[in-house]
Image: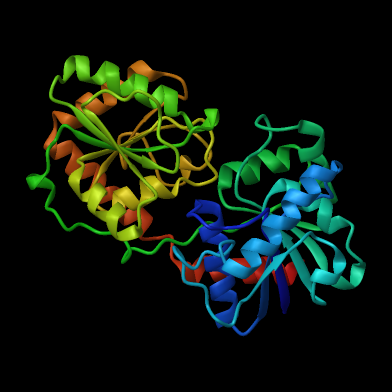
Length: 354
């Protein structure tokens, strides 16, 4: 097949959903398909002259420097054609069998393409209903010729709304993250957390839960990471920005517990990485986490917004080494079922069906 992925913009920094897109592209290219990934400087034409000029300057500058690409954080198969474009006009697209929108707001632009550019597929990696403009999101789901989702809860929710979608779970690489520091040698009161400023990522709730947990466990410390530092952290919380996978693996191996207060995840790559690295999980119940976080079996799970229970789960894990080891062992077994060979085969099957 001739396959075109459409990203919502440049990829100079690590983003979980974009990492998955590139990995699917790599795997499809290895399977013999002709794969292109298009990165526009803008999705729709800018109305104001000043903005059009600013975007044009960025397009020219980044085209020259290569700043738009993931070269610094992700290896893309040389057989995948990577395109940096000024917009999503049809002349930037090769003839294709399928064109894949990787976010809801990339669906509308590809619907404007001539039909010889291929069937329109929406690869939904995030349940956007309730977290964006409802009418536009619904139009994106309705406009696509076919849809792919990455978790079973989203597939069921979509079906209840009248949308059929193929289920293609993410693949995970158990070799990229692993246990370097034995669990028994780690500080049981050291917690890791991904911080993101978006409200649905639960950063504020996560910090509240840590504060509450520390009241019961005074020696508790936390190590946060991400792309935007939260303001005014206490001295027992450290923050690390834009970590490489090697640095991130080391961070996970310093922690005994990984926590997430997120309200909405398409999957939750960070808890999986931390799990492979030996951390026990204290996470919230959302569509993505349900793929691998089973309360009392592979993680301790609390309801979204219930910071008291999340804090209690952190304290419980900190005080029980046997529980941490049992949950992590079961978690790593569960995560091992999500292979890239399986994911890529299902993705190829979904595209063939489209």
